[in-house]
Image (cartoon, rainbow, N blue to C red; front, side, top):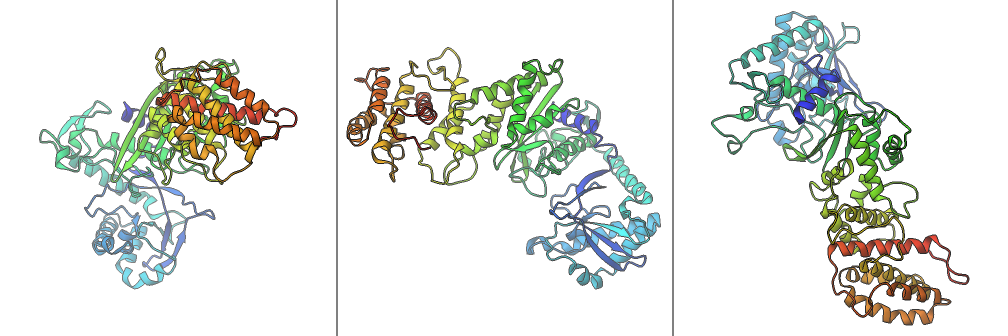
Length: 574
């Protein structure tokens, strides 16, 4: 179903109107004269360094074989130049193969543009030094195309004779494939020859920059029943090019986004969204992960529920695909099928579950949540975690329990002075949402409110409130200190309150003696301890109970910030 939806998207968007070409970035144009003289090298990048895309003949799928492009390729093929010592070893062979294709087409078509390029390549050795000086650095990956001085601004590969020649070449390849094994295509259901190799998918985090395969069988262990390569998952060439073109289109950069139809989920994953029929809901949904424009996504979800957009309860299918990279392969982290109607309900519930006092009126994006639970000392979360969180945002799925564990683990680590202020709020909001989506009717599924709940029957919640009051009392007595009780004891108190909190309560008598007008805080601590049997402090807390402890601490802390203290009491500093 996933490949069918991608193939349908490519056809709907007109990406396969000419199946012989694809949109690729072009770094530079080599202009040549009639006799093959090198005239100029024109860079295509704009002032912001963005490289435009042009429709070029499809570059063949390459692994270790030398397969040149059709009048378009990288510098290692066109010029025989670039790359490190290992990559440059085959450059002469690549350049010879590229030149052979150009000369064969020039002889076949007798096109003056093709003849000019063939003449340029024939005397490349003498012209190469001057050409290389036109660019400060060459990596070998620069994609080059040709223009001919006798043409009026067009590119050589776009000339009618060459387009026809390329179509004939592709047709001959397809005709040759007719001798291959005929099987039923898993995407279209039609019987015919299958694609041996599938096109590469580019711009997937963690995968090779040159592109990686979504479907491949490059080792004998991956094959079965005597089948080789693409025969193990029979898909026609047209369908393979369709789904790959759709993914490359959605993953490509546009003027304002890193991904045209997708969003980055941390450093190791990307999610792309689309609908069966074109719908503006996708453009709005992309802002769910935008840390600046998330409010627009909330409006999109709330509007139909409040009657602001009648008739928008649409059954149009909606798709979300999360991808990651693993060396030369593209890994599907998650696949979600839904409808626009269900999507709007799910997104609204997602923001409602995360709503927590102290949010400053801005909802939390998935990007912020992932950043808040990143393991200390290294970048990125475990593979698959981002996909599970996105599934909770877009579908009626529980928040993964790993996120609860990760949020609690980060709360145990003292924050640096320059840490962003939203981190504590994000972690506690994530804990709240995770607890709310636990299976209903179980002992571990408490009700968690948006703001302070003084009468909550949950002992762990009241213990968290008590810790916040103890922290506040220390501040009133000593002011800012190098290591507060939160820095020293929060993690231990959250896991083993029966060991830590009685000691802190005894210590608080010394703080109360030093603090001025702290009676209101002592009375609050008495009220909190009156909510649970103080003589039977729980020795340990489960992971869910630790989450309630953290939420209780956060609620009480925010209450201190929100309410002015009694007359004469020092103000609270955030």
